[in-house]
Amino acid sequence: TIYQGREINVDEVGANDIAIVEDIEDFRIGDYLGAKPCLIQGLSHQHPALKSSVRPNKPEERSKVISALNTLWIEDPSLSFSINSYSDELEISLYGLTQKEIIQTLLEERFSVKVHFDEIKTIYKERPIKKVNKIIQIEVPPNPYWATIGLTLEPLPLGAGLQIESDISYGYLNHSFQNAVFEGIRMSCQSGLHGWEVTDLKVTFTQAEYYSPVSTPADFRQLTPYVFRLALQQSGVDILEPMLCFELQIPQVASSKAITDLQKLMSEIEDISCNNEWCHIKGKVPLNTSKDYASEVSSYTKGLGIFMVKPCGYQITKDGYSDNIRMNEKDKLLFMFQKSIYELIQNKKKI
Image 1 (cartoon, one colour):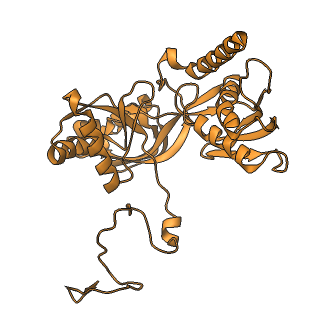
Image 2 (cartoon, rainbow, N blue to C red):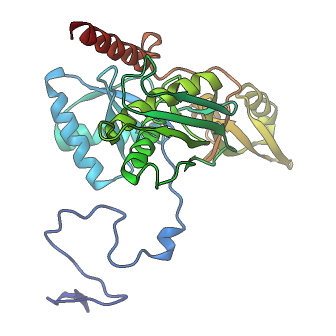
Image 3 (cartoon, rainbow, N blue to C red):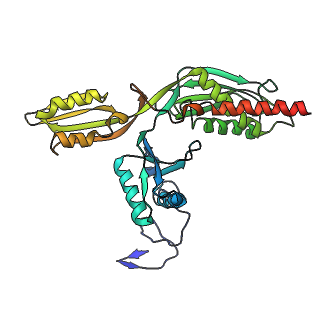
């Protein structure tokens, strides 16, 4: 511990003490010892709303980039990266352009690897449009699994997230089978009809049937994504886009241009206050249309204007959007379902 500027070896530390703990490999930023502090419980973490694919300038250094990003993730768990299961591209979620530049610099200076970032894209989300029910019955073609699953999907208010409920008694279908369905639902919500996360919905497990002893939790886990996908197709989805709450401060002489710009950016202006020298404008604006607006403000106000933003949730998109998967991959899940059915039929014919 530290006492009067000196390090002292101790066996324990108490509240308000400052200590140095060495050789602890499993701790991550945000971890805590003992009971979770109430201040941490009240914190809300905003997830990145932008993403970009990153490629090493030398293709043979791909594994080196992954290792370096993993090291950076250990140091800062808010850094999110993954390998796209369809394209095999390395994707990084970003909070903004500055973070991209910092990551690029760190990779070059600390890990001696140069990378290229592709176009930065907005991360959208999906929400079902209406309440729907879908059931796939056991031993009814084309179902190849020893399970019956019925799901009800219904939209929830924006920001509500995912809620999962079960109408099935644990006396009939035990926890391991139902937990397998819940896992399948969470997995299914990772990629909707357009490849984006599905959110703000309630999914209810409404019907189940199994054959003992041939049915297993794996049957229920593997069948769930197909039931979910068919239900989502039946409902249709709204595309949700990330919104920013903004404050724009500009010289009064630039106010007309600013208001015109904000209208083009599809913003919702909530308040305008001006005096002889300055104008202060508040409102909401889609992230996708305003990614580069801070630099534009600096340009047309000659450095005097300030455009400040913070995340403020998602809303149904008013403008265009991009898919997160290629068109021929949208129904890959159902194609695999049909393929497994075909193989099952062929095997039965051989028997």
